Image: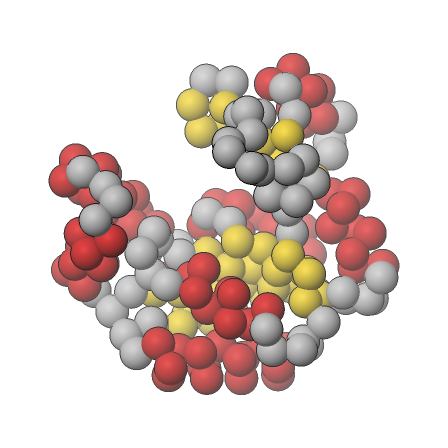
Length: 185
């Protein structure tokens, strides 16, 4: 039976970079694919990037208890983690990796208990986070400020995670996260 690795972090913390690094480390990891009620974008494929559901299908599955966690981001736009695909991967002996927001991370940890390791990736500071988000050049100043406010909220959840990795030096963060994950699995 596999184990569960939950990763949460404010946008710009380097979480995706660290997860992608771990996925190359021969740790028998499988990435949990989220479900969404939004339409596919570009070349996105059902079952690869997301499980695409209509808003009504999503609501029915919520009512039927099919989700580990879910969130209505805005009206009729849902994201969540379906239980069945995760359970299938765990039964195959895979260690399942989740990339979720802090509330989803806390909920998944509650569900799996000791079978789950919840890791919070933290930026060195809010100022550094602002520099990283600005440096990306992908967001307007208004969007960046919105992400900073959300990050400040999310940082308040860090103490509910099993491990906190401060990503101030990428190589150091990679070594630290690999050590924590190897010890757990």
